[in-house]
Image (spheres, rainbow, N blue to C red):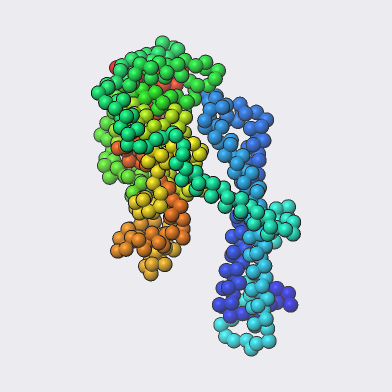
Length: 484
């Protein structure tokens, strides 16, 4: 009997077949998505291999150094993702084979059940067959030992996760000594000291008034800015931004410029309702996005470095002071290398991630642990932890608790936070990886949102220094930036 003349079947059986078909289609979509990504990544890697300079210029502009942090990190992540996508082909192929086999078995079972039985009312047509899945033969045509390949790959990933967990509990690293005596000693080095004033001189004669904890800090930033332009340092925003963090130089003109900009925005737009701590409250995330677009329109006639006008966190809190960040990382015992890694990789993701996927190297991760900047598992406030999970996960947990999930993520948060027994919520989230969750604390006394705003402000400082070097700042803003 061909599939086109298969008999009508009860609706419940037709639904079962349709569900099984959807599982096959879902795996097909994952395969198509993965192979499309692999193809795009292969093309980008080939472009990079042919001419790194052309690749960097097309993405970051001519001033960006080839070996700077943004391009090197991007290309390494593309390569890693590309290799991982190819390595996981057996997993996707096995998932497709298993989904297809379950569909075939179900169809045989349904056919046996309805063949020879008396037709009843309410039957529906046999679901249409799935379209041919052509063009992916090389991806699906794997060796007979595919299950062994998948098992070996999953064991490898499990060992990597265990290694990351071991690094989480590594207390032997000397960096970031968080003992009370060490912390007290490092704090005493700042007690009674005041910031020293000085000037940074750009090569075009522009003078910037700054202050730092020592003249050595100012000299170190001056040396960074004086580096040969062919090395790309002056044109590299992130290099200068990291230099500001590692030297702790406050720029007086930037403070005047940012204050004037902030006052102008607040005079024309009430942003009080948008003062959102996204770590603990994501209910207003859509309003934050709305604020970003409104700020962009308001500032359309104001000079602001590229890619900063759409960040609402840029105007949260107070003006960023690198001297305070400098003091923080010195007090917690970070080396320059650790401080740079911590600053660069503290991306705006609410500071939450799963242990196996923590973004830091072993040395930096151990230093963060030893300095007390990491919370894990039940030590993370529940309201903070919830922001890590997608609505689908939260909805499933709410259903397990015998409640009805809301249509919005914020409603799911409210339901779980108002549940009378938080421990029950945590237990329900355990199966979703709650106990493998980690959170990076922001520098004291900043919230995570404020810290991200500071990071963007420091990046803005670096961009403005580069713009002043190339005389790209309009006269009005330039006068503020050069004020002392």
